[in-house]
Image (cartoon, rainbow, N blue to C red):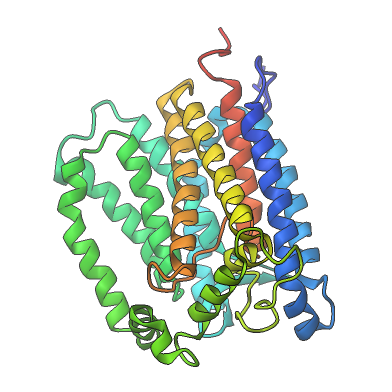
Length: 373
């Protein structure tokens, strides 16, 4: 008898993880609407333009999350190679026929819907590397024959994303792979050996692209040219500072009225700080900390190394994006296009984040406490 892709499992999903996720999603959609309403009204004469599109992808993501939470966890292992091939084809296709927006080709358009293959690539790298590493008969001990092939694979996928003029996306893809590789048993000195060429590559990517170099120089002193290259980060700092302890109130941001460019995207955190203050910002960060803590717990109790690596990869990716986003908007590092998970506008990102969360919930059913005997 052919085995079904869907299986009846003993045990329940991690309730704390699920509850935190739902709160984050509701919180994120609420703040995305608040941050986007002014821009949407100005650009499209419809204050609900962005939230309607985000809600559409959220519903698709929730449906995908449910399917991912019910599917046989070994099915993902079986489709890792076909998924990789499809992802590589999409990354190449976007370079050929992708939609050009502000000089960057990152989107494929199908009718009225656009999506970013780079968002798929993040999770594809995690799945494929977890599959490959878990299938190994020997641990990752040798630098050139064990470690470097995985580095080259990550660099290849990240390179395709980089060609879209998407440095932050390429770096995120590479980091996702490194997280899985570290959890999979690679040695610390392996990563230390690769650090100098990686730093050199990042410096070269910044130095040889004028707009990236301007961003970096403006980061050193954004107030020096506060009406030019430093404008966005200066307005971000104004928003964070004006929120005070309790904020101006939900929907009461002033900086979202075309001061911060596209405040519903990468710079949504300053709007949260402005409207909900220090309390709201801490509440959001605590929610992410709880999500990551429960994710790590699920990874520790996962039934096998494959599942553990995938959970660590996904949770590590979420944590990395949160840290970089907050560092950017607080002028702790140069400006880069790093979205805030579950908050920033972006249908493809939200959809695949929810699907990934569904798979983590799936694995939580198989924890060592309630695994099927």
